[in-house]
Amino acid sequence: MGISVNGIEITDEAIEKEIVHHQKAENPLKETVHELVLRTLLLQEADRLGLDGDDDDARIEALFAKEVRVPEADDAACETYYRNHQERYTYGELVEARHILFQVTPTVSLEFLRATAESVLEELQRNPERFAELAKTYSNCPSGGLGGNLGQLSRGQTVQEFERVLFRLRDGEMANRLIETRFGLHIVQVMKHVEGRLMPFDAVKAQIADTLIQQAWHKGVHQYLQILVGKADIKGVTLEGASSPLVQ
Image (cartoon, rainbow, N blue to C red):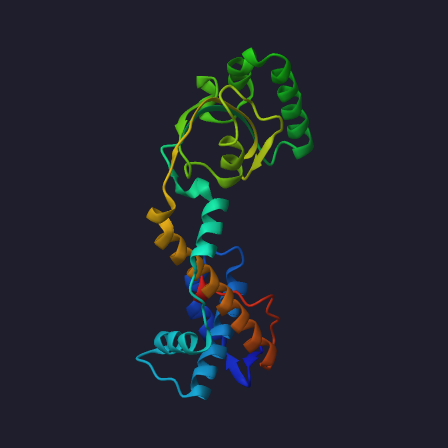
C-alpha cells in the first residue's frame, strides 16, 4: 500500500494480521492503518528516548508515563462536575413510559415516514386518549401490541438520545416533538416519573476525581499524538486527528 512512518514501511502482511482486531469498526481498513501508523510512531519515539519494557505495549505505556502529564482533580473541579452531571449520581429514578416507533426501512422513504409520524403526533396532541389505539396501528415495536407500553425504565436502559428526552418528562407528559434514534422516529409519553435520590458529593468525590483524571489523560495523549504526527514523515496515508484504539 506504500505506507511508511519516518522511512519504516507498514507492510501488507502487518495490515492483514492487525485488521482482524478491527472488524467491528465502521471502516476496519482505515482504523487498522491508523493504529499501525500510530503504534509505529510511538515505538520509534520510545526508541529515541531509550525506554525499555518487556514488550511493545510496556514500552508505549512507559512513553506515555514519561511524556503525558495529567494534573490532579481538585475539589473545585470535582464539585463543578458534580453539579453539571447530577443525573449520573442519582439512584432510584424510574419512569413508566409508552411510545410509538416509526422504524426506518429500505422500502419506506424517510420523508413519508416523518410525515406520517408528525401526523400521528398532531392527532395525539389533540386527542391523547388515542395513544394506545394508535400505537397498535402504527408502532413497529413489539410494545405496540401493548398500546406502546415500555414498562418501568431506569437510566441506561435505552439509547442516549431517547433517554435525554424521556427523563425530562413529568407525569402524563408527552414529548412535543419526534425523537430520532438509530431505530427510527418515536412518539413518547411518560405516564409516571419517580424521582431518584442524589448521592451526597462526599460519597462520589473520589469517583468523580478518577473520571476527571481519565478525561484529562485521554486529552493529554490525544494532544501528544498530534504533536508526534505533526513532526513525523508519514507517507501513503493522512491521519484525521490522532485518535487511536491505543488510548480509548
